[in-house]
Length: 296
Image 1 (cartoon, rainbow, N blue to C red):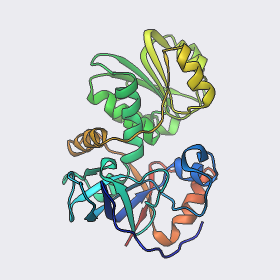
Image 2: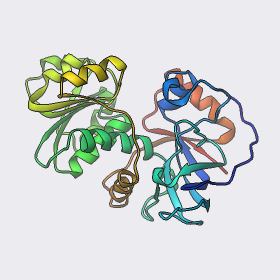
Image 3: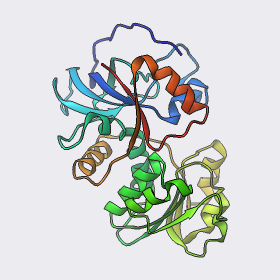
């Protein structure tokens, strides 16, 4: 990875140019650079890095109707192009939402991938209904915390697993029963759930399916070709791919603006230190919240 000057192209049809205020670092960033997502991104390097961001609209292309120059926005850069960790980025208007006045640019930058992924699973795939019981594996991670808050916002009762260090944070978010994944054999939990969401890609499919009530679904954040094939024969298994849409981002924005969805920010670094932070997180450094890059 290296910092390099670039010329921002003009936004095309349906596209928006955004001056980036903050970019959030996600595991998808090092998965892209390691080639783990080359079936989606292609194999060509060099490429720009970064997905989630907040900022201010510079200009819009033809047929853009959702935002205009000067609007404060947040969203995602397309996975094939990336580029959120930079001074400006081009994104389709369908991957953007207006930033609610009630939240900061820092908080808005955190919402894209975690909020959309949680929504994809709970709403799109599971069709979560009020009164259902949800178990979230990894309830103190960014996707997990988003899933907890969205599930509770929609009227579900939430249990989950995380580290002992994250347990109090999970309880503060409304997780009724918190299991320490280090000391609990999740396959031995007696309760059964309408939805089990593995947000950390650490739960075996058999364990997730075993925790379900009749008619329940297991949401798996680690989609593989084998799991997609298996899901064709087992309707209870739902592999999840982060798929942003305008309606989801608008829903995430409303939830954040109403104080129902917020992710903690643990560390903010300037653009000059972005590479070091990406490397540290890729190598396993743990933060109690999101790592952000501030673009001045």
